[in-house]
Amino acid sequence: MQLSREDILSVYDAGPDAVVQLVETLLDAIDKLSEQVAYLQEENKKLKERVKTLEDQLKLNSRNSSKPPSSDGFRKLPVKRKKTGKSPGGQKGHKGHTLLMVEAPDREINYPVTECEYCGCSLEDVQSAGHERRQVFELPLIRAEVTEHRCEKKVCPECGCENKAAFPEDVTQPVQYGPRLRAVAVYLSQYQLLPYERMSEVFVDLFGHKLSQATLVNANMAAGEILKPVEDEIKRQIINSSVAHFDETGIRVNGKREWLHVASNKKLTCYGIHKKRGCEAMNDIGILPDFRGTAVHLRHESGSMERAQLRERWR
Image (cartoon, rainbow, N blue to C red; front, side, top):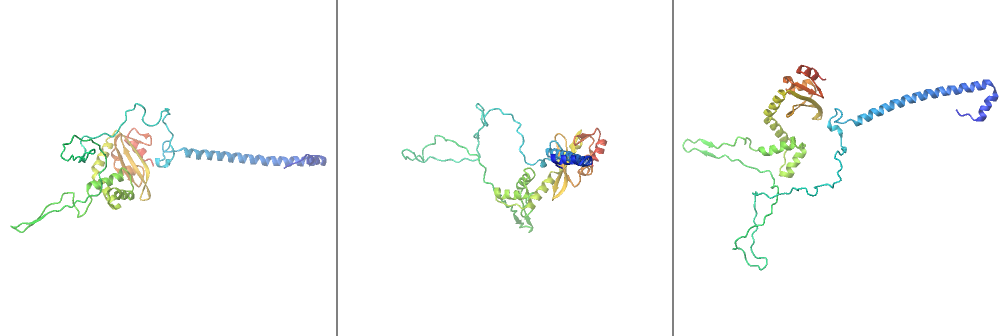
């Protein structure tokens, strides 16, 4: 409500009743404005609290919360190294490292001198005065090599029995892949973490041979069977540890959410994938039920296995 000087004087000239009515109207307007201010102040308080909550969530990462490292995203990490004022690279007086010659190279190529470069005289029969050496470190041409195993057959002239030589123990199929090729496939998959499609491309690009994804999967499964005794020994040593850490994180298996469980001591780690998290999964993996030491989980430890298992009923 806006009142000019003339409006106020008009109300004054109208008498006391008009003045009272104006003051009451102004007081009602002030009360309504006070209510609106109080409401807006409360909304502002709520919005500030909401903004702070969202800002705190943005500050959370795998180092200050239980969020997995994969949720950190791609961001530039702060540089912890202090500036020294020195130029990058090796400093003056620093002993450099260079490629050195080897005493026994794998292959030698000799380039003979056949004639004098000055007068053209033939040097075919002149004794060598020595060599100047240069060495090149290079990878050999890599391609899949096919070896055919042929077992001879012979018929005994005395009894007519057909005799056949035996194949090597690891040659069991008419056509198969050898152990080195399968080992490279497992290494690229399980250590270098290449997806199956890219592994197939690597084999074509480097070795000139295409492997199907089914072959790569079978190679991983065969390696898992071979390493079963190693896994059992890791479990045994963790079970016998005085202190062990148990934890889990979400993982996608065939597009569905499952859980990657871990049990570890200072030297060894055992991983296991399960559809559930918590005690039931750890029991199925086969370490927690037999463990009698101190179990640590999420920075929370117990003094005895009974309490650890109670706390393991975490969920």
